[in-house]
Length: 536
Image (cartoon, rainbow, N blue to C red):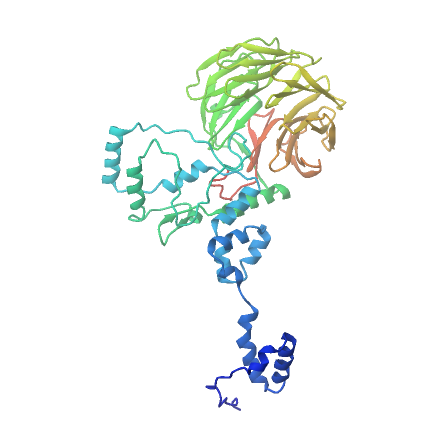
């Protein structure tokens, strides 16, 4: 049966003047009564006509900048939910600046240098490249500069986001405001004008638009990858492996246990009981073996130019990290150097089995100050700003004034020797032979939490105050992850290597690396098969 036809479809209805003076309720009642007189098909037509007035999309009608600003107040879950409302909302919710803000709000770090290099690394034809090189030789020195990694923190553990940093929008070409020593403005202009003239292969699929041959930073993907890694930490989901790998040349290996280590995105550096320091690339190939100590290498730390190491021979050795040449040997301790830290650009703080701490001038090798007060070996030292924190076999932790050498506080609570300590300026975290870890208020000296669970001496701890995470290792080879805020156990990771004693550990956001009485490192990889490009 066909629907009835509306013979008055072309007629225009005009509202009588007297109806304009009705109240809203009177109008609503009148309309309802009229609707009850109509057949259902016409009621449905009326509903379809008024639906747009009931579902007004305010966000899509806003200027793009204002819409982004408004949605910027949402958390991740709400933003993802909002993206499902409509196509227009999805486009707004995918805006890189929203995801960059969410990323930085978490305190996560990214490598601004690597991003800039990636965005500027556009292939050029050989003729233009040659002309740039020729012109560059006449006008500039082609010396690359070391820029700091910016973000929530950088490789030096800074925790502040770079001020004034701008979102890297898709289809935009971000450049640093400061002039580059490599390319002048004229060349940059020509470089940008040519960026779409030649297609190129790009491995970073998530940060590349094939249609326009444009590189950009996909902040949503960065957030997703970083979040996935963080979830693995919480769930204890990691891939365990040893380093160097099994195919490493036997001649490259240490002969005896590894006491200390440090690593970054390019290398591992290890110090051993065999009296050597080794520098490894990430594949497991030993690039250098440094000699010079006449005793076990007990501690080390490196920066861009030097490796500073302490030994049971009671000496501290400063070695050029590139050439391997010994720059200087610091003599003064009367027994083994158990821990040391690089301070600022020109100072070193060390502690020893001789019960003392020493502050050194790195450039001259002069001992600037001796800190006395502990009654047993000083096993570990840390510093922040003008305060130094030391842990001793006398069961105490001391806080010192860097400038005067005066002991400001003595923390007493452990019932065994204190083997390790970490200090971030707010918290002090210590591990002891009494099998416990303690979290202290650095300002008041109060013990906030005592963490029990290890079955042997807690030999090493490290903290991350951005992730609020403590990782600890003990003499039975067991590793645990704790919450820095309340001291609760997050995960028991089990033994690093069966039959080993964990002597030291370091971790970043992707992995924990620990050393032991064995000749290889144990790695807990939480980022296996996750792209970590641009993340630090």
